[in-house]
Length: 263
Ligand code: NAD
Figure (cartoon, rainbow, N blue to C red):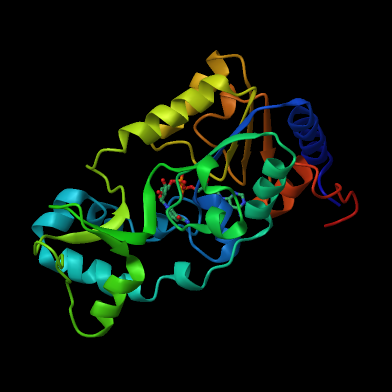
């Protein structure tokens, strides 16, 4: 049986969702763990298990150290992202959009699974970029990741930009790298304009994007947080739902009934 207290918070959160007309959703790595992509800071997270790997995720290290780049390309070859499929959490957000209530989907994820689930690209802001493309850090070159990975497989351990010979990198935002200004402006505007902010599967500790939660709150929106563990912003939420995202989210958006007898 789902614990009574969890059922109460799910029902309360579902009422908030049903009453809202403009929902801004913020998703983090937790929505993709049920698609077998590990998060960073959850109990089985990549950084929880190997704290040293967080340091390698800085732009400065990537640019300065060819060995860091070689390791990044070689790790990327067998990333779980390439075989991952969207799960019921991603599909629940598609359902929310089809009922006309999704204002904007802001994702911290770089895996592209919201696109693959069928969310409208015009309503998605990938605030930390996407791993499905590569960019040159020196010129405007941009290409599908598959093209770069084919070069790595063919023997180029650290492929250079085909146009200018510059350093190639996934089109993601590393630590030490600025966010895309227009994306941040859109995200903040959506936090101000929504009547409900739904934060899903994020520790809400990565700034500036975690700041959309207090912005929405100050603008009068309800705040719902769905996460398996406490987050930095639980105190700001009207309702916190502690549980598995792929089970909880379909119920919150009305795509599935609450199963009161499931374990
Ligand atoms: P995070 O790793 O800091 O935290 C994930 C949170 O989700 C944790 O609190 C964890 O307890 C919770 N969680 C994990 N699986 C869950 C589940 N099935 N149900 C309920 N809760 C679950 O994630 P973050 O705050 O998004 O920040 C990490 C940064 O790293 C992101 O900004 C992103 O750029 C990047 N990242 C992306 C991916 C991806 O694209 N899938 C994966 C790892 C990291």
